[in-house]
Image (cartoon, rainbow, N blue to C red; front, top):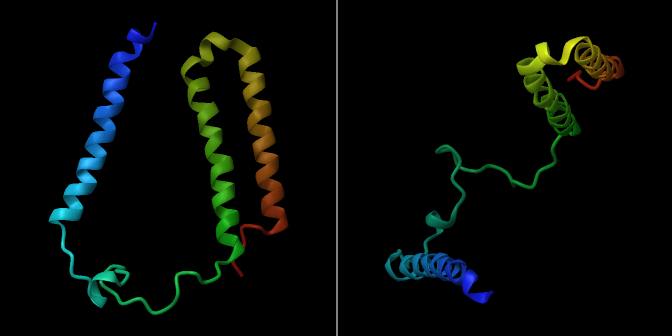
Length: 118
């Protein structure tokens, strides 16, 4: 029974050895002088003006959440579009209900003003 796991053990050792070897080589061959300029954050060639731990507006998170919610819609719509002929009328009714629920959610979000940036 254990002899069946031999190739898996060899593979695991090979993967761990490759990772450890890469870390060891970078430590040996990499630059060892630490300077202030090397340790600074680099953002598109512009010096950093403020802390990266600044507060973000909640609207950014709301837009990201809405994007994820409505992006999941495509996960269901694309496979349905591929087989919609074989599903018949029942599949069409189910998808209309699904899109209707999403449209109602979008209408609610829009009505509440969650997409406004004023």
